[in-house]
Length: 279
Ligand code: PDD
Image 1 (cartoon, protein in one colour):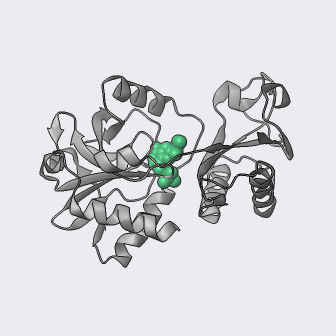
Image 2 (tube, helix red, strand yellow):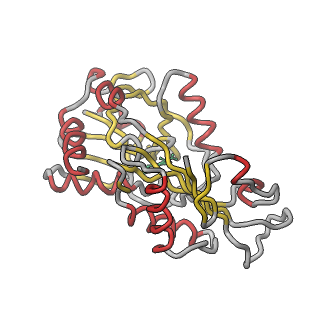
Image 3 (cartoon, protein in one colour):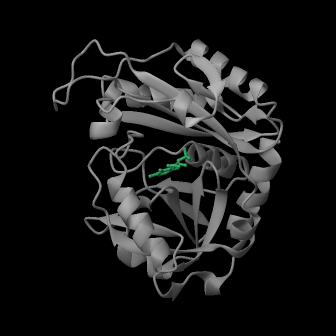
């Protein structure tokens, strides 16, 4: 197994990728990341992920370690070197760099980049059975649009959800349903897909963008709007999306079944269409 460490492909061993205790990612979570899907050894919608990576870096004024085309080259080399031809995912992160601990960052730091590739099998059971989500107060910061390494709010909420028998927290803030702990949320009512608009309250998911495009192709209407928590009880169907999971039905919110704990027709159509369109 090989990984990318800065601009080099090295064997994936801890001693080959050591980081200073003064790396700002380590001390402050001062960095950004991406999770990119690989289907049959090919990076999926890489450009969209790189758009978001550069957006995240710009918003935090992190100096990009490489150009877009250099990153593309490096990631492709990583896949080739690993002879990776199956389904998987790439994790990559950029931290701002190394300096003596100070909240105030220096401007000329060299950002630190690394990436790993892992096998990822299709989550067939989740697709077929659906998952439960647990409503939780959104305690994250107000720039959820940035794919930041600072994930404590998500970490706490997802751990609590999973320890309580749910797959994901479903975040609400000011009475509005926002998104899940590591996925975007959708409610279907009277044949219309409702989902939160992209702004500072949620991460603009790559899978979200794709699902909204696919809904258009299938002529399923979409409304991007704020959904009140009370509306959930009247939902016909709900589902979530994320890069590793694609479209996953939600069959229960807290103790309340959604669509009698069954996968709804529109969710099923989207799942099937998604599978068809990516290959
Ligand atoms: N999470 N919302 C949040 C808070 C997320 O962390 C993610 C992805 C998404 C879905 O985005 P996308 O469709 O681009 O994967 C929405 C990744 C997978 C993670 O943290 O591991």
